[in-house]
Image (tube, rainbow, N blue to C red):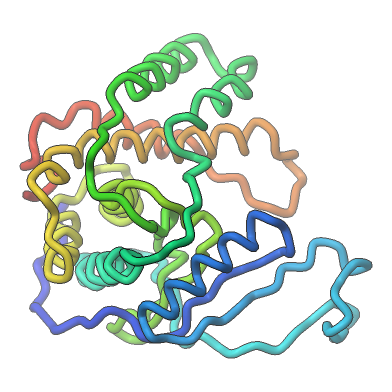
Length: 287
């Protein structure tokens, strides 16, 4: 069921701090550099969250509180929305477009390790643990994208993981974006497609075109999508669903059941993949 269309309040791209987690690895170093460039481009502060995996190896400037390593940093006001509504989607689109524009002149390049070339290894790492019909479906999808992934679309620095738990709202205003761990260089419209998957499906995995229309309209208030980008959106959304299906499936297979990290059900993204594969036109996405 589509949400009631809200009034059209004025939203501005966020100017609060950008929060980036780092764990002193080479991967997080690259994420920190990209987040720093974003903060410079948007004219906002950068907040760094240090993740310490082993308390025995924590840096010397950490203190101990209640027997645990701790550090004091600036506070990002707001909370991430547990239930996404149409009212959230327009400011998310605006903020995403603002990030894309801010990254236009970045000299730093970081390939997307989880783009098409990374999907087959994820699948290969799970094949022994999944049933034959799903194995065939995933193999066919990967082969399709290896042969048909679009080229020549506008590219730049993307967030690549702008889910609702990475966006903070303070009352009704977007107050900040966090977690640039997967930020990289890729197609800008692919980042939009990730958001369509992250923000525009309901709990029963039905697609909410009203949410999609709000998100896309918000994005285009800041940066216009080209006709070629719009035409590619169904394909890119299908690919984004496959990417998160594969990473969730890999984690489901390889993460111990008693691990502290909570595994996410890959079936959710299998349903979304099938929706995108069945989409016949841009009308299915609210355009």
